[in-house]
Amino acid sequence: MKFSTLLLTSALNFAVISSACADFFTQDSLPQTDNLVKAGNKFVTLLGNQVKEGEKAPDFKVVNDSFGPVSLSDFANKPVLISVVPSLDTGVCSLQTKRFNEEVANLPSNVVMMTISNDLPFAQKRFCKTENIDKVKVLSDAVWRDFGSKYGLLIKDMGLLTRAIFIIDEQGNIAYKELVANISQHPNYDNALATLKALNSAEASTSPTSVAADGAIAGH
Image: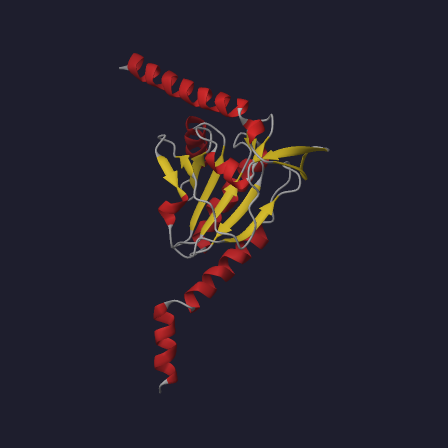
């Protein structure tokens, strides 16, 4: 049994590494953006399509800690906050993930929070267990690099995602975007959370139930 488990783990590792290597050799075919983000004192090149606030959020496919596929479309008609980190093995990324995990309790139950990195699912699962991350969906873009390429977040020659925050509204539009200027710095938590709460309040006030209630009150 132990040998079979080891063999399966090795096969999965090989599949992920092979996929990552294939992506590395095709990275020059992706759009490139310079002078947006720094690593230390140097600008890095971001690969993929840069998205903008107000645009329709591209659907993407990542994997959970069991290598099961997860797509943005799985959470249609729900507000989604996507916290993007380079690697959970670094201090800022760890703190960022813990912060959003704590904030879930202060948000409406329909809000979906996810953290996406290029860490392998095995490493993500270990991190979540060690740090008691149980409310944020921690997902990996290591298999297909689909999320990073569609949102312009792949750091050329590093194999990592740049630090960022996105908020997708219930209509599937990008309501908020922050590319952190230096990957070693924290994102603006307050701005992101305030946007998410305001967005949720606005959507609640325009829901059919709310509109019907307002009409009933106006009729009296």
